[in-house]
Length: 424
Image (tube, rainbow, N blue to C red):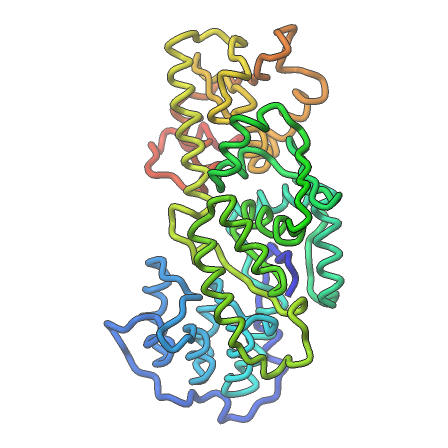
């Protein structure tokens, strides 16, 4: 499976229609029945699509394992319930043959129709949500990151898998890491939002550094790059060979929930029997993790929401102290890592350029002019945050707009504010 998924719209009907199958292939091995109180495993085994859909909509982890070390997709494939399998796959169930769970699903598939479905989804995994897709594109817009992942894809021999390495979402990184002499480009606010370690470093020792060089020889470049990519996209894909290195990095970065999942997966990997891929070494076997496997508070939207709350709190304090444009110093925004001030309806909002640029073409163009021609400085001191001023927009509407940009959701919104947000 490609490390980079295709985010365009797609269907699988044509992939299934051209397969010649016996009429018996359309029948499940276990008769369909209703399990109104069943868990995701029981619903998958019974083929109860309505119950399964309800569980998925309530946020159940589709890649969770039961006490027999099996995932819901395994039961749907084993019993031949193609509608249940499709529903699980559409909601992020892992089906790559290069993974422990995916390999079991392929091996246990009741018939060719189920296996064809798995193959079709393996070639075109479900697209990311808008927030994750936008930030993933920003990460890939950085040439060093893109070049490394292209090389990884080539090593996996998945040239027939569609990918989108080209990105129009380029936004300059504000920090560069060097591991064993190899660069990783990143943005401070993303790393700080996902990792207490990075947050502490950017507020203190690395506050004024544009480059950070790691001298430890044991630090794994593939593991760190995969983790940072996960910070942007909420989707982790890493070779089994690099998982132990990733555990060590997660421990340092204080990504506790991710660390626990990977440690548990390592136990599975040690005892997994790759029945159909015995000839593959661990560098070819992959571990894939969707963000939904983490507790909600550790996923990307919740992490950025915390950063937004800190920025808004600073904005309110700034308004009380001094509401004049251009008096915000860089040092005043260290805790929130804000790097732009947006003036709306006599209120200053401290924001993060990479979020605004990744989520809005309008702000990407505005910020490009600020960075290239110092539009937002207007002769102000060099340590003053660049600022943008927006007109014909209420402060309340702008606050809702940036809440959506940071989180992909809104707690509540006044219908009268919607029209004001449409131009962005």
